[in-house]
Length: 295
Image (cartoon, rainbow, N blue to C red; front, side, top):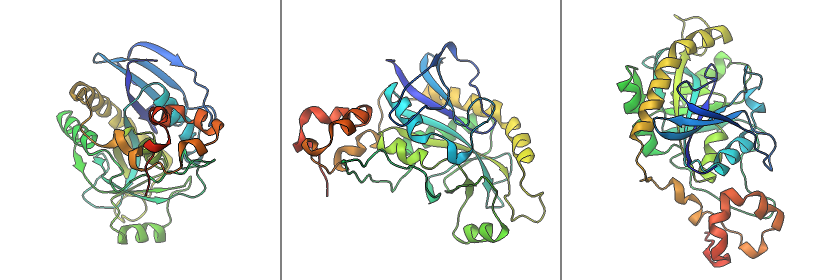
């Protein structure tokens, strides 16, 4: 579908995007399975694809999310920027429940999740030193503050498998690493978005202090949902404001990630792999093998 440039990925408690006009449900077959539910509509004059990460009714565990199918599907629609919403626990006193964090760094503690589009005869090594798009991060932080939220810009987001919450020993370890927030879904989502040359940033909503804060109740699912319901309206306002402010052209380098990442010469890549990854690598194919650079 042409004209869809922005994707919104809703997390826990954020199951629909109010204000979308002309909503159409999308059914997309991908080489990586069936994606989560996707609808396309218009918001502030911009075509938006809204994806419900955990499915309608929250039926999908963090490790069961079809991350590759989701990002492939959004890329196939033409999406260039993704705004993700994540519920997180705080590892720092000043990042209080009810606040938003726009992190700039990531630590991956997930295991066994399919975390790349590449392989099967095609090798690529992307740069991921800045896992979140700096241009999109700045817009989100400003939009959240305009919407009346307390928004912290910067911080390290650690991704863990779940579905259980952390032990006190784990929380103590992560705090000693200088981690700011903890969640279960930003990886491999952010990495796949970078492989697909899509700008990606997250509005992380703090729901709790995980297990470390003696003056607050331990994290539970009902605590999280209760807090999330308080944030939804503000998050929607911030998304609307961000969409209004998005420049027509991207000023970051996210859209050129693969220029120096693809290593395997095109003529050696199996036809099936090239077909499966057409939305991801298609723009590099016409130039031939000589256009594929590596270290």
